[in-house]
Image (cartoon, rainbow, N blue to C red; front, top):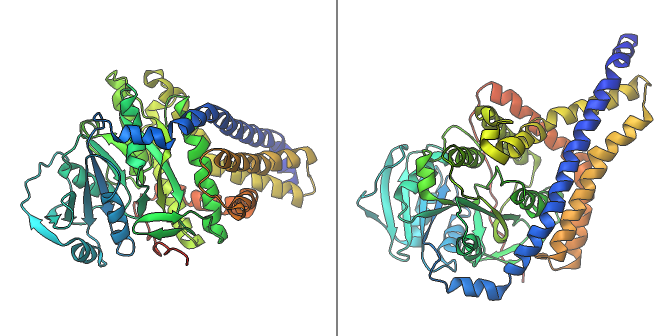
Length: 474
């Protein structure tokens, strides 16, 4: 114990300072994103009014869209999801679904529900993929094309869908995603504002606990189970002010793979999605930023808060752990693969602001947080407790996080207010507080595992169990 005490006497002063400075800096940057998001949120909130949406819906300038849907073992939700894509309110769109070697009844469910028939493989192969077995059209919906192919992973499936797409703009969505009826119209809004747009990101919300009928969320609720309930807070914070704030700082490095719109020619120019990266959405956006900067193309990649898609999130720690480890492993791979962007003025705000934040503030955060908890535990055990350090660490590691989460709930309540019951608002506030005590520390452990798996070259996704969407309550 004396050796430990002597060791702490040497390293504690500077290590405590590093940890506190890191957490204070990161959380202050999150606070800055929140402040920057307020004028963005105010602008989009007014543009999101129904009268503006109806005006946009009647505009001839809306570009035709292809919805790309990779599906692997999605038999539980595939019927409702495809129906929601096909019946979206948009003048001209198609759905290109890729069955990526599913081992369950995904293909059978599609054939039964949509009356599929095989068509000739008259599609150009702009990006190489795993072999395609067959192409199918639907007798019920002419806008549906199903591609049945050998398993190659989500990125490979998206590339196959992009090859078969016929329209100049593509929207990548997950097969378990429910897109709101007018979301495409809202997502296409930047094209009518005279902007040069390379990509647009929309909002993802948690469907767990809500009622769903015919591929639509009929009653938005906050799940009473605390694991998906806390994730509702995470998604609100990430989308409502995190990504909105980045609009003012040069754009996002993440457009969710569950709901994002891209110019197809730009995606083909960079070779499509990268296979082998388990967060292909972030890798794609980083490569797109690089492509635009290196060629001097002035095109934006904004985030818009009012186009909404709903997704099912894990409801137990086993599945949540797989998801968060995979997310962080993909973040590590993307950051290190493109490390030459770090503080590189050639890439503008992406190289000088966005990439450094994700490199130091996101990728390294679980390591620094673990260090902070270890130092706190050691000084407690050895009796060398520094009251000032302990209070400051708890304030920035827990208190600051609670404050930001509560503000996200307040912003949601003041603007779009999807959860209209008082009980849901109370639950959101409760989850905003308890998220930072226990739950966050568990997710730090999940993210730490990513470093070990990345070093070993693990590329697996891990099984993501689905329970399906809830029927309307009587």
